[in-house]
Amino acid sequence: MLHYALVFFVLALIAGVLGFGGIAAASAGIAKILFFIFIVLFAVSALFGALRGRPPAA
Image (cartoon, rainbow, N blue to C red; front, side, top):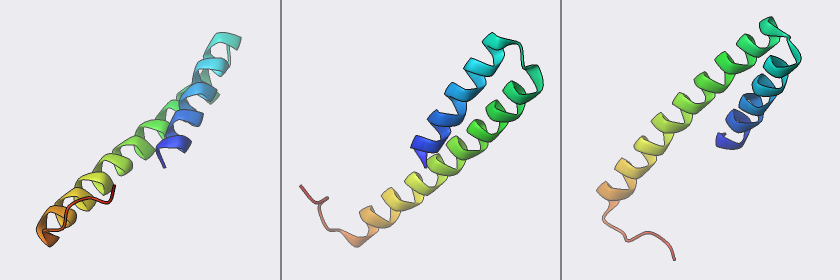
């Protein structure tokens, strides 16, 4: 999911440089939403991993 957030961020940067403001704003919005979803899922995964008491896989 973080990969898709980065892809949309790069797309927003390229669109912004080329002057496509609407597409840049939409891509940046999508990237921001995906990034926050990633952060929430990462936190939930880390919390459940800590509650299980098992060390992370090496």
